[in-house]
Image 1 (cartoon, rainbow, N blue to C red):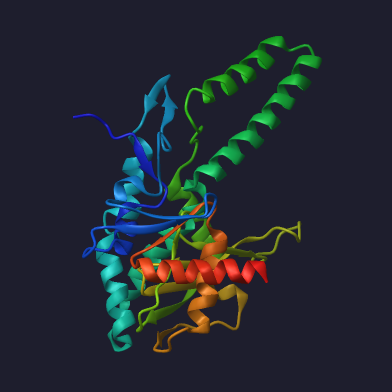
Image 2 (spheres, rainbow, N blue to C red):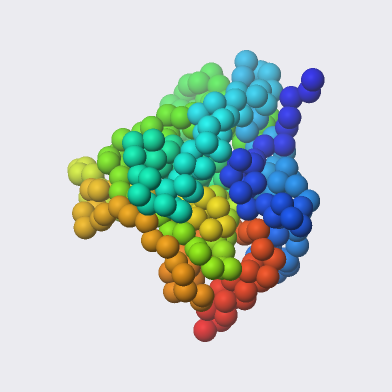
Length: 294
């Protein structure tokens, strides 16, 4: 059995919650091409060949990062998503298992940016520039062997699409530790309106939540996760203060809350946003395009 090479930066366990089972389609909008379209499966949306491939002992490793994602962020996603949806529909069912599910989804969202192809490319380019400058300085000091070794490591990293020198689990754990305890606010749409799913999977906001010598260091402090087309979860570090947890049911059509959230989701997407309902997708996108033009 061959190892899959089509790697998702938004997991299918997530995008499937935006798939229209009746139409057998997921509807999307391409911001770059200004085009509405659909796909008949989530296999080919929010994905890219070799996105998680890395070089290990001079061999292409298509599997390790995919296995890590599956084991720690995807395998139990459906169970935790159902738990949160149950809480969104009935806030009286709040218990420890619901809190566990909210933290699970938060950890999934905390690695969204490092999974995103454009961000991987930017990180690799920055690292390569730094290492090339290091090689140049080492060579000026007369160490040709060390300079050549640095240049070879850069050349080796180019054998794969991205270097992928990353451990998603460690990043999620580190970011969650720095955020500290979280407050969760859940918004559930009880009308025909819908939330978007952006190609980066969620919204991340940074703030100064820890004390360092450098006062300008900001870390992920808030994450916003469109769990389904009807349920959105805000997770906020308690270090920000003045936050609380709760569930809000939105019964008003043309809700300002929904419009504001979709505005953030639309803005966070580099290229693509998707949702379950074609009519709602066109309505949301046209609203956002109108806001930009104003």
